[in-house]
Amino acid sequence: MVPPDMNGVVGSHDLLLVTLDTLRYDVAAELTAAGRLPNLARHLPGGAWEERHAPASFTYASHQAIFAGFLPTPAVPGHHPRLFAARFAGSETTADGTWIFDAPDLVTGLAAVGYWTVCVGGVGFFNRQGPLGSVLPGLFQDSYWEPEFGVSSPTSFEAQVRRAELVVADLPPDRRLFLFVNVSALHQPNWFHLPGASREDGDSRATHAAALEYVDRHIGRLFAAASSRGRCFAIVCSDHGTAYGEDGYTGHRIGHEAVWTVPYAHFPLAAAR
Image 1 (tube, rainbow, N blue to C red):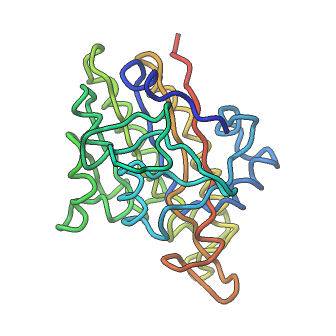
Image 2 (spheres, helix red, strand yellow):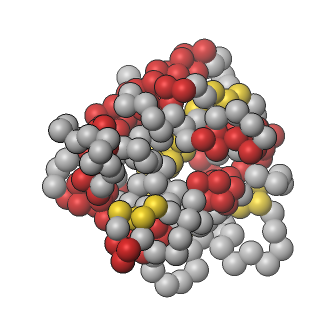
């Protein structure tokens, strides 16, 4: 994937960053190839996800890296220019097209050039219910979380999209927006997204896939809202994957291929007419 010149994007576009928390690359690629993610697939360059390596193996660490400009790295050898980077002497992945910020994190850097920064949280690291859950949303000028956005809600993504639509509608038309949405639906527990599954059955690769199909059914509304004010540049990726029994492993925060390999895409969203 050829990186765009982000110096021409920042300032002229709204920005949308969506992390599909815990989404595995293999599941995303298989469902896309099978035509089961029509709303996401129509935006993916070439109709497919890019295979990348996550910057960390669990949500908190990965998002700290992402907000510092370290998006998932292409899973092929070489030096891969980054879209965003803090000014840092000797960085080998800062290129001519990289947007450089003089701040400790991307969110603060965008706010400094006039963006209104908004977080619509999902998993517990964004729930502001304690000091740890307040660190990441605390980077933003505005942040939202409620129980319906969380991992135990079968309608979490619909609720998050409704909040995002309200955020976009309330913003003055001359103010640039950086909207971040942490999608919790893929994270455990996700068994309730597969018809016929039960709590006793637990989560599985199949319920993980069903959760992604649920997200796909509603993500078109998020893209429409994000592009309703004009040009918007979107980044959609996973922060890490998760294991469902492969090699005896379950979950994440471990060094397993199912955890480190994630789907990634960036693309412009055409302004709504």
